[in-house]
Length: 485
Image 1 (tube, rainbow, N blue to C red):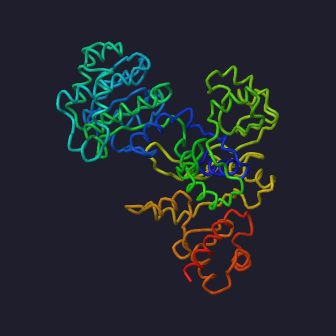
Image 2: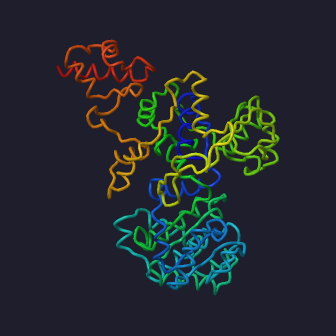
Image 3: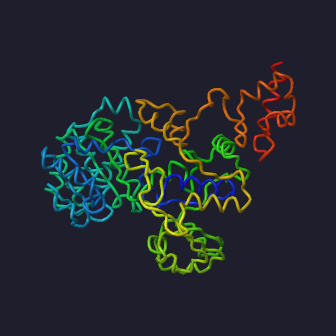
């Protein structure tokens, strides 16, 4: 799905139907990484870029069969190995194709990645490899993190016992990391899809923070996305526990999104996450489901039980670019023909958080349409005429922002919206999102003596005459203006 597809679907469900029971592919893919990065950095962001792989002297792959799952990116790693003699370490319970190219393969016991990296942190502290100046300037909680790491694995011997690895291999791993400054640690589904996934992510990040090997060329932790455009879905708030632009459900954020979307029934709290959602279907508390571009009858835990649960639905809609798959065959009442990735244009976001424009290179067959178009048409038929309408991005404005060396908060929001934001500085903060009326225009109307009530402002500017969500704020502006006079 394109980022635009995610955005419109999320806007309809959370803003107009009023339910946060919407979740993206990130839930079964990147949720552990998201939680780990937010715990470490306070934001769902990756501190590395692909180019770091071209400059790293040691690449550590954890739970990642990149040779199969990221074949293009993997070739960059192999080129670094062949041309610059970069070392490659593969950590995986299975001997995969990636392990065949590795200088060191660690067949770790399942679920023991946290123990391995806690042991590594303990070793780096004992051998004085840590960057205490960086720790003091840029981190908090180091003493507690190191103490906890020592409780889990105090040295190579304890690490070997916990991970079922050969002690000599553990020592070699510790030595390679300790003596190599330019280290990139890449991790993927073997880390994320685990009951301890978030802790594994933080154990990896902690090593890089404690050594200061982060935010510089050729070094840092790097989460390799497991599914296409997982980040794009999160940028526009597709997860059940977030709103658009990485916002949550705090009162100020709810107010901002409600006004921007002109959303009359904005969901005010987190919804059910993917697995919880299907368990609710199983119990009969969710009676309608719309599945887009995913095959949950195969990918969810307890897949057999989930397939049976789908038969309980009173309405089961599937948007797909194939006529048949396991989810469709589970009893879809409505099958909508969705355009495939090569048949539609828009934007996607990759593992290094780079937004790319995707251009269609095939015509849409038959009645197939982009997901955003399908959702928009459903929204209109539900009576949301001013609702989730997709406007094509203004590519020239987007291109100019890509050329900027530094982006402020305003520019980042313009980049996510795909529109130039022209006029934002003149109108001030938008108060009435339905008609784009800003604070400056409202104040001018009040100052002119023609905006002494909400009704006056409505007649003059139309603000407050549609969904009504801005009316309380209009009253407050009028009251503050009266006090000022």
